[in-house]
Image 1 (cartoon, protein in one colour):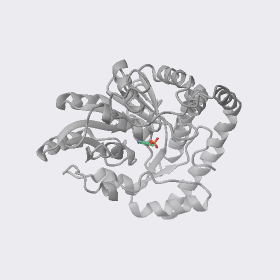
Image 2 (cartoon, rainbow, N blue to C red):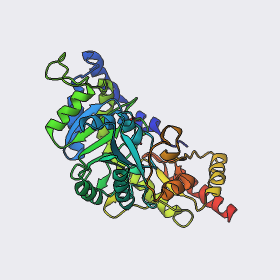
Image 3 (spheres, protein in one colour):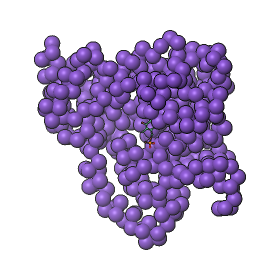
Length: 377
Ligand SMILES: *Cc1c(COP(=O)(O)O)cnc(C)c1O
């Protein structure tokens, strides 16, 4: 059994990928090729609107947004402590201060109450609050309506780090641009929409902002190729990756439904045994991960070992909150503490999740979790 099965999907779309990649080989337009605008338009349509700027990865996408907003030293960016390191690192590299905020214990997403405390504390520490980074953990959209209200109240930019949640629904919509000023995503192979290498995208509402993001992603280019109007990065999406993504977008909606089916089936089998994911009203997760929680941190290693012995792969996302990572320890944290982030990092465990999991495989995972639970009492 695979934790994330890229092989089955590859076999399914292989002939389409071969054909599309051959188109690129024939044209040899490997950088900024004609499939890039085609992909950007297709992604925008899938999202239900918005301007799309393809870039090299999901981390760069966040840095591009930071640069587009002109933030640097002295500015604070509010980031949940329980996330992948890039959510904070992408801004820290600009000299910005990541300010760590706690999460909601049930949905693992940034807690608006903790955020509001953090905003006032940042000001007290002489920092200038600039941006909220909402991470849609494991595929579930954060509480955007409340976050927008806070962004408006304190005049902050609201960014949705949707690396794990591209395609997820909130209030029936795939797009978060109604609330968020910027949405970023990653096409790392293991993400729900992944390519065959690194890739990412920035989404926003206006053409002007998109042009600014594109310029930053391409050496600060102006209207002419060798006209550089600002300092920028080299963060383009390879045309070959756009070829892969175009093929994957054809099956993506169906895959999201299949992931939902897997999650429902897990839920039926496991809800009496462990804490299964909480999905808030109005949300449909893209199920980047199916993450359960055990009741005490001492129990997790025994469950991991039990599953390993049964030949079932599991992963801990994430074993440490960012404030405990060596590179990030010096950054401020909300004074009320990061209790829920700490707790989550000690008790979560992600089970195999992908659209091609077979019923028998899910049954086997459920059976082993239940069997472990009986053995520990
Ligand atoms: C994967 C991920 C990123 C970074 O994406 P890369 O393409 O690997 O740079 C950023 N934020 C979150 C929440 C992620 O899961």
